[in-house]
Length: 114
Length: 159
Image (tube, rainbow over all chains, first blue to last red; front, top):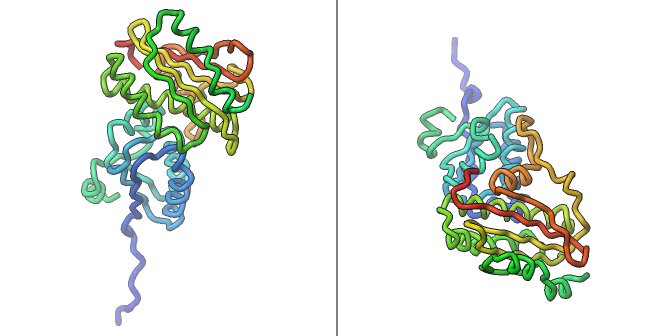
């Protein structure tokens, strides 16, 4: 039988990567929220690269939690990458460090199949 | 009291000085989200000057930042650019923080941390403040207007 030339849907498409920079705080939370929810709307796993994020507060954490819940509600995941010590402490304070899957860097996330 | 008048009236400062605290700095700023990055560096430097290590200093920055956010979002409300006065003191082997605003009085019973097992966005600020600082109390203001939040953290105290 002749094979179809129509490509099969990707079972594990490349994740959408969102790079956050500088302060992920009350001032920038509206923009961060918009970017994260736009990434989740693409219906792929989302990697949030925090390697250039210098500060995160409860407003930034709220954006991440909202996006995580929307992603998981659609059957996808949202993982954090290159989390600074400051951000990790904030996640620990909020008891969210075990809720998010955290990768050391983008290569580690790729190796883990994120 | 409008912001300009408020900025000329800092009774909390003399109160702390009378208690033997050494004033480190006083900053007056408008309650806007984009002003918070201006104060974070100074808070960190003050905490380091009090003898806290870098991790503890960053935690203190977060606690004060979150308290300022509460004033901006819940005290004055978005779009109202009231005055905030932050005063930091070296006191009793640690740091004493006074945060003065001129917004509507806060009901302390309504500023409580929420249940963290309920994973949802928002309302983490009060939890961060109370987890990091040793004491967090609203003090009576000399003219009964606005709020004076007093927070302390002693050296060597865990989170």
